[in-house]
Length: 235
Image 1 (cartoon, one colour):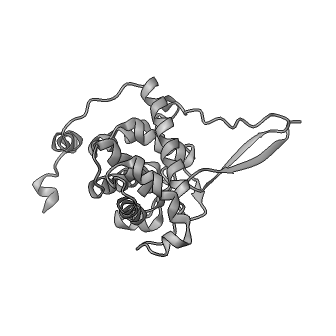
Image 2 (cartoon, rainbow, N blue to C red):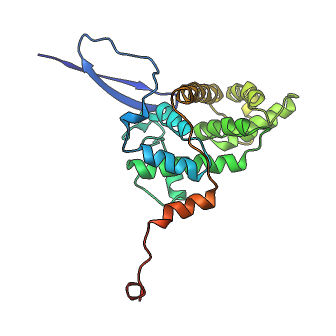
């Protein structure tokens, strides 16, 4: 009789992922990219909301991979929920509580990342994206603190590489006690971004990009198939 052994690991975002395997088999610990073709139910959702916010769908898949390993019921120690590990307080900003539902979880996660992208300034789009990813993981306030610290160190606060250099210093009492937002796990934030970058590069190598379209055009496309209610129904 086969015996199942329950195992778990905690990803870089703190999500507890449960696994089951027959006893005696070795646990695979590689970070292989999970093929989007295995997740047909979320594939159109990822691509829809990525394009709506002007993002590469492959980046969103990389985030889901790192955040939850595609486990829709994953819950972190901090209470983050679902595929994109959305916190309940973030969900309230977007007027939903149904974080275990993949479509809603992805919608909120992508919108939350996009909000950070609009707030964070960088020299390049890539600098902005990498800093926004770090903010998604550890909070945008700590990115602002790291930017100020980078400037104090004579580094470039608009360069992700320079911000990543000082982020680990926010774990030191003599540093974080003099910041606005206090202690953060700066090293974890940097590792999180690096893991997403690695995963994203694998997706880029294996899957073609989708053509980007203007946001207003996309909104018209998404709503074109929704029939308007008749005057009788509206009255």
